[in-house]
Length: 130
Image (cartoon, rainbow, N blue to C red; front, side, top):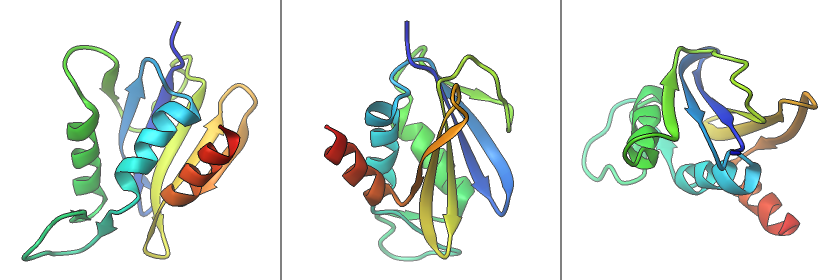
């Protein structure tokens, strides 16, 4: 049985998309993949020239992450924004605060925030717990 997770992509308090992951949803799985992908991204409003590691707003970032992670049939699904109660063990929220990307991870069963910080901070936490 897999470790299910939900990931909400939020901009200005509004959920743009919710992604369901059937397995590998734990911190050192999905959390690590999120952090690795997001750690070097900058959110901009308008762009030109080199667009490496740029997202033109949270909607652009959300689309880039889904394109990055979806590999064939199964495991990754898009659900209506703010979907809850899919037997998920973890819920992740991707948001921007003070021009920094942040990841919040909640253990659904314990209703406990297990992480809330930058992608690099999450990677450090995972490395420290390994």
